[in-house]
Amino acid sequence: MSLIFLPLALLGILITGRLWEASIVMLIARGWLPDWLGKSMLATQLHVLLSFLFLLASSLIGENLLVLIEAVQLHF
Image (tube, rainbow, N blue to C red; front, side, top):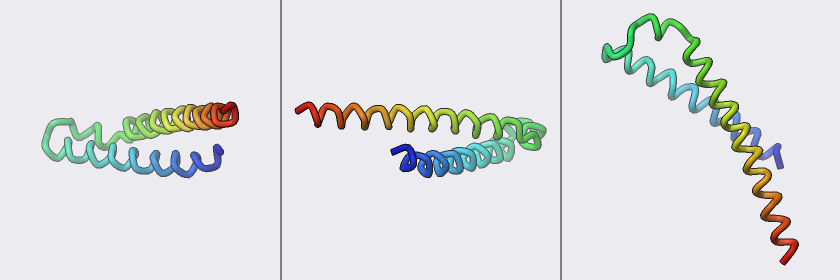
């Protein structure tokens, strides 16, 4: 079951990482963030790492929920 969640987690990491980068660029262009923040990729890397951990936890929770649903279905 975890093989199903792995591609979804990787896709989510790519999407959230790209959205985070785009939002930083937009805020710098509007002058709401200093330019040095955009040059530093530390914020983007940190966000991608947190997104990966969140998606990994979500997939583990999702997998446990599927096991619970299957157990309930087998019981009834």
